[in-house]
Length: 251
Image (cartoon, rainbow, N blue to C red):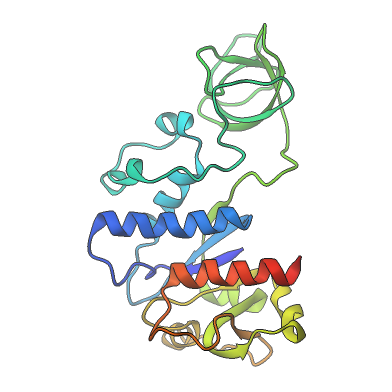
């Protein structure tokens, strides 16, 4: 998982650029198979809802957005963003045995759920789910179109969740230019479940101080971009750089 502050877009005023920066975070997370993106509150600026809405919009398959995501002013530029092209975003070409995301459109008197999986016809599913529920299904047959609930075995996308910084600290690696230079000797420290990033203006330690949170000395603080050539490294740059380095380290 990665954790980003609610002030992630603090330096941006153009709504198009803000949306694109959230896409960059989403895209990096998808490339490196991040399963959870936490958003923690920073008192400097709280755009948690905006960031969460864009991230969730991007993760949702295009054919389901009209059912699952209401029209909002905050999403007016989201449709211009490139697709994430993750495995759950299936094309219209259908294969028996493949998994797809769907949404329950109606429920029959016998309890059959009729699911939209991005085709012209609804698929029958022998499972009782409420109308509007998002489901992951396996295609059992094409004629008739029948599906069953299933769990993906491959990377399927990320979830987005609000969190408090104090709840994240104990299970995190803090990424900071003031941290220990990353090396093969300290790669085991990266196996913490959450990578904790600061804002474009302040690091995690500074944000924690404002919130009255004491960072234990046992929490690893790592610099994944040592000897950087620019005055600052933007959040979206730090995320993709860190995940790329970790991908090599871990694998």
